[in-house]
Amino acid sequence: ALAEYDNARKDLERRKDLAVKNLIAMKDVDDAEARFLVSEANVRAAREEANTLLATLRAKRAQAGLAEKKLRDTLLKSPIEGFIEARLISTGEYVKVGTPLFRIVDDHPIRLLGEVSEAYATSLKSGLPVDLSVDSQPGKTFRGALRRISPASNPANRAIQVEATYPNDDRALKSGSFGKAAILLRVDPEGVSIPKQAVVTFAGIEKVFVIDNNVARERRVKLGDDLGERVEVVEGVAAGQQVAVSHTGKLVEGSRVRVEAGERK
Image (cartoon, rainbow, N blue to C red; front, side, top):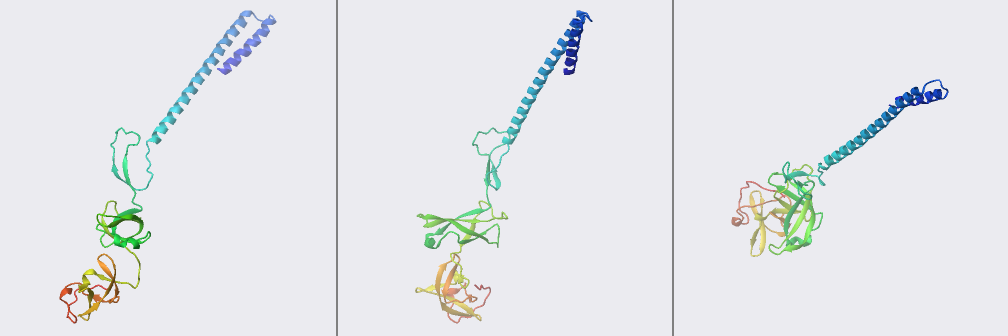
């Protein structure tokens, strides 16, 4: 359209010059002017069409940008690492702002909540090792650390709530599981502990029977910390000695015994 317009303009100017010199008739000038006006109208129409197409393109781009934003808005990103424990909505369900969609469990690290007798209140401190065993992982012990200690005890059971954390890199510990935990109040490489059932108490005296060549030898003991199923022995039993844990009420000094199983700790 622009080339046609430019040619028509030049032809009109040339014919006007010739008409001034009386070299052509005015009809030729009128014809050239008509062609020029048509080409000029074509240029305006082309420009209007181009502007319309440009406006349409801009509108399409805006629509595409809005569609991309809507698509991005459909992507949900969890603020924490973990796994989806529960899906709280269904496909196609209408939800409002603030509606819970999923329940995410962060199990790396994982927390343990438990209670400890208030008798150990003065011994508890953050950072103490906490060994955990769970039924789903028999024979395996997980080492964690004490992180939080409640400042008050529960008057109903005189226990203090504590919280420990475990790295759980392999995700072996599962959320909601139950287990048994032991807080290592102090580590003594030379310490000795025995099963509680090995201790015989009579008239306020605590004693055990050490097994020596299948003979029971009575030993008075001084006990230390309560370690759950075991108890610390401060005096009376050396590391590696065997103690009787059954039929202790029938034993006396020098009784002959038969060892079926033994522990050395």
